[in-house]
Image: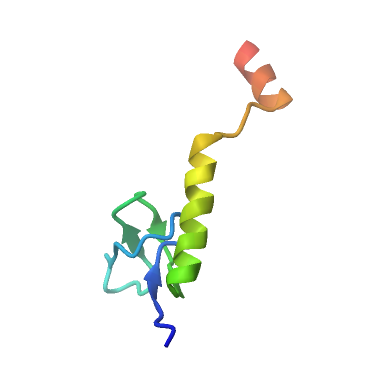
Length: 73
C-alpha cells in the first residue's frame, strides 16, 4: 500500500507543522524553513523532491549579466 503524508514542496521533508489554524494553507517546514502550502505525497515523491533540493543546494544559481550590472553600480 502506498501511504500518503504531508510533505514540504521545497525539500521533501515530512517535518511540517500547521502553524496558523485560521489559515489552513500555512504550514512550516522544520528542515528548510519553508512557509506556505504543502503537498501530499508518498515516500517516492518525498525522496525525489529531497534529491532535487540537495542538488540545488550544491549548485547555487550563478549570477546573470543583469546581476553583475547591478553589482557594479
